[in-house]
Length: 261
Image (cartoon, rainbow, N blue to C red):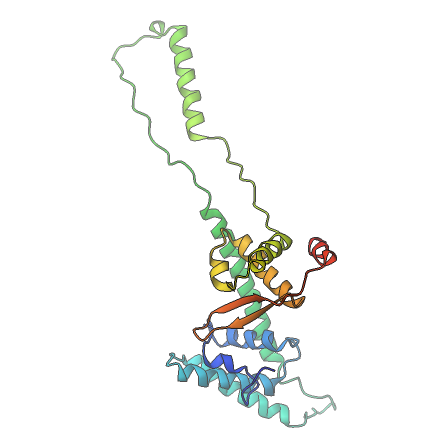
């Protein structure tokens, strides 16, 4: 059973704290951790966890921007409003939900963040495309007073050949790279082969040894799948490492087939 603090946060948060780009980024993170609907935020819980995070930032000697403190005060104010009964206007209608403004801000921030991530992915993709820089060809030696009749058919063919060579030089054929495909099943079989030999694997070291981003994701999903099926068990070391050890249980064939479906 996971031990939690008074605000409902895991004790492991007191060891390491993720970096946030601002108070709204922290609020979105807390919403994801609590797995709640963004349009129905439990203000009391989020407020307590927000203040708990600020306290941890102070313990870790992190610089807390003024916007975090301002947002914390806004959450306290919103929490107090949620404790009071809703007032009605002259028409007998209840006043607007006090959380509405916060929800709209978070939705707008999430849209901007997703758009920024999409642009960053496009920029990262474009960085992998290389083109040859344009280089001026050496000027041909010319003589003054050349007449049209001095140019022969062979001279024209030679000029055409130079133009074609220059075109091929400046417009090389596209390079087609075949994408690598890593399946969760292949990573499961690789891990089981290592563990059956009586080894204890360091999960982080194994992930760092993978050759590409796709293989890292597939290997990580394989570890989670083996834990779910109770084929392996994870152990955390004192220095923050994570070890994986086989439990002795066998993986059924239908479980392997389910990984490819």
